[in-house]
Image 1 (spheres, rainbow, N blue to C red):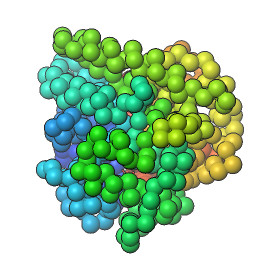
Image 2: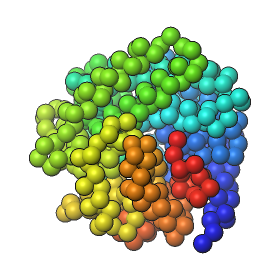
Image 3: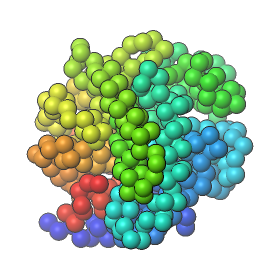
Image 4: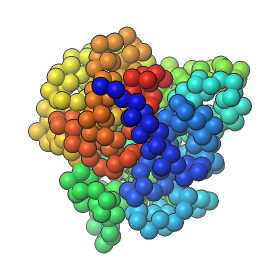
Length: 419
Ligand code: DGY
C-alpha cells in the first residue's frame, strides 16, 4: 500500500483549516484557535512550511494573559455557531479569550519546529522564549498542589468527559445554569459528545470561575473541582524538559529554575501511583481519593521521560483487546463507550505522544505498534477528530487539523515518527 496521497491530503487539511495567522481544529465544530490544537498544527506545518509553523505559535502567545496564562480558546472573530462564546466567558481581553488554559505542549512543539530548521528558527524561538517561560511559571504557581498538576475545569485537561472528573462533577451544583442551546450537537451526533448533564456541569464551573473574576486563589480555594491529572502533569513535565533544552540552546540564565521544576515533578509523580490497580491514576483533591481511572493519560509517563516498566503490561493487555491503539480509557471498564469522546475513543494526537515517548524510552516494539496502528486507522478511516478503537468508526469532527498534523509528523511512512 502506498500512502503518498495521504501525505498530500494531510497537507491540504492544514491549508483548508488555516485562517492566515491561526488554524481552526476543524471548521464548524471548532471555529476559533484552540491552544493545544494549535501546537499540533505548528508541528504539522513544520514538515512543509516552517514559517507558517512559527506564525501559529506566535499568534497563540500574542494572546497570553499578563499573569502568564495562555488561554485555551482565542476568539479571533464572532461566530454564532459556537457555544459558549466570548460573551459567556466574560473575559476582558482583545481578542477575547476563555479563562482557562490547556495542556502546555507548546514548548515541546516549539523545540520540534526549531529542530526542523535551526537556521530559520533561532530568532523565532528567541522571540517565544519569555512567553513560554512565563506560561510554565504560571502553571507552577497556579496549578500545582502538593507537587501535582491539577485542573479546575475538565476543558483545561483537554479530556473533557473523561471519567477522571466524575466524582468531582457529582458535587457541581447545576441549579443556576438555566436554558441554553448547545451547538456542538448540531455538528456531531449526540452519542459522540458529552452528555447534557456534563454540559450543565461544564457551564456551572465556568460561571463559578467567571463570578470569581478568574481570581486564581479564590478558585483554588473554593471550586468544587480540583483534580490532579497525570495527563497534565506528564505533559507539563515533558514541556519543562524541552524548555530546559531551549534555554540551553539559547544561552538563557533560567536553566536552574526549570531544572528545579523538573526534579520536583519527577519526585511527586509517584503520588499518582495507585497501588490497588497498579497504574498512574488521577486524584480528586477535594476528597483526597484516587478516581480509579486507567486512561491514555496514564501512559504519558514515557513521554514525560520516566522509564516506567510497571505500565507496560497494562498497555500490552489493552492493545491486545482492541483493533486500533490507544483507547482513551481501559476497554475493560463496564462504562467503556467506544465512540463517546474521551470515554473510549482513540485520539491520534495522544497516540503520537504515547508512541514517541515509548520510542524515546527504548520500548521499540510497543512504540511501533502504536505508530503502525495510528497509520492504519487514518488510512482505513480518514482524518477524523477521534476514532473507535474497536472498529475504527470515525467520530467527532472530520477533516481534522491535529489528525492531519500527526499523520505528517508521526504516522506516515515519510514522517520522522516522533519529536
Ligand atoms: C468543546 O467546545 O467541546 C471544547 O472541548 C471546549 O474547549
